[in-house]
Amino acid sequence: MEFPEDQLQAGHIPADVYRRIPPGSDLRKVVIVQEAPRSYKGPIVLTLVVATSAVVVLLVIAFVAQIVAASAVAVLSATGGLSYTINRGAKKKRELSRAGTRRRSRAPRKHPARSTRRRFK
Image 1 (cartoon, rainbow, N blue to C red):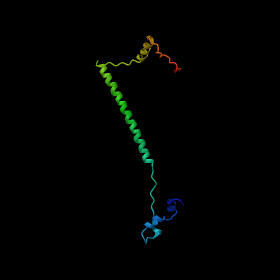
Image 2 (image 1 turned 90 degrees about the vertical axis):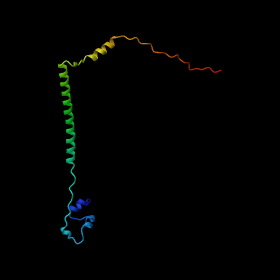
Image 3 (image 1 turned 90 degrees about the horizontal axis):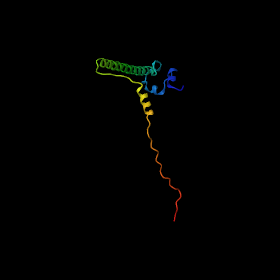
Image 4 (image 1 turned 120 degrees about the horizontal axis):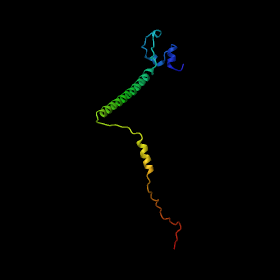
């Protein structure tokens, strides 16, 4: 028997528990109660529920913010206070206009070559 649990299941009383039994007690009537092993199921489920609910709350906040922003833009554009347009072709036009223009480029500067041989007197 390697573990104290095995000893208790077999009916043996370990020495440290035996010393705590008051003198004069009938060992045949002594009952040793073991604590159940800890279950990690509850904390794991609680962590998953908290994480899932946090994600759901963030998604709801993002969705509500998007609806509020869209309705604000719709109301302001309907009243004439704001005009909002999306122009997806603007980026391509800018790139094409830059490519169509010619720029004069300077020739790269060339440094005079130094001779590696030196004359000594």
